[in-house]
Length: 280
Ligand code: AG3
Picture 1: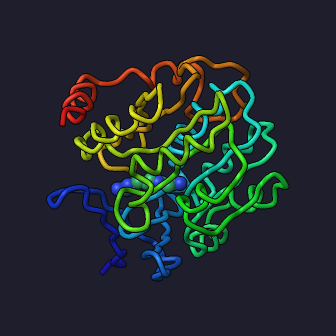
Picture 2 (picture 1 turned 30 degrees about the vertical axis):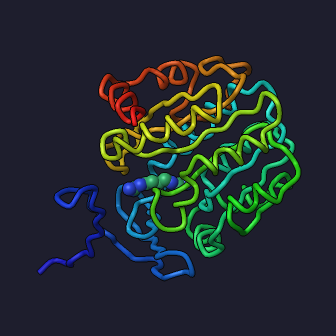
Picture 3 (picture 1 turned 90 degrees about the vertical axis):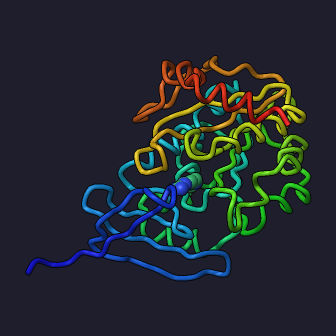
């Protein structure tokens, strides 16, 4: 008899999804906010799962983290002060720190996510030791209401609109982001799967077009996320997407100037769904 490995599954729809053999469950606990799990998989390395949804893996994290951080940071001519909302696994933070920024604030609601990721994801240690970083444990929405300073770039690294992330997917939330952007500031957020979360994208676009002059979706692959293709949104009043204003940091594995141009070209079904969702 061979060893029976534990199987970890995420359902993307009641009838299908993704599975992993977990060689070892490194941690599983319920924090005040959510169920947190980290396990080891032979191919993907350590995998972080929150409330049953795969958030990141050591092997494929770069697809998502680079695409959330670099379009905004490379289009902005001089990002000095950056705010990350969510992103307690530190993946977006490590990408932001590749730029000569002045300050980065990361606002994560669940301190256990930070602690667990510090232990199991190696990029966390150098990122957290960086003098430019300030960690805030708290609710992103409240933080935006209380903070007085403004930011050049705001990145929203939320989970899906269930659990603690619900309030990070509303027009009101984006209104408060806009209020904290400096003139010429840009924001980017992950907005889900264009294939599995169809109508959600259209509603988002409709809400956000009342807040920002420029609202542009872009996409990139993430092997472990539902549908494999992921959608992001770029928000600003002034900056024009697809224009790299400066040198892109060395050592990236997905993002480059060609990808930036290509990412804003949307598949026909996405264009249709966004249009449909905007009609209410
Ligand atoms: N945040 C978005 C994860 C969404 C994944 N969805 C899913 N597996 N159904 C990722 C946080 C990584 N820093």
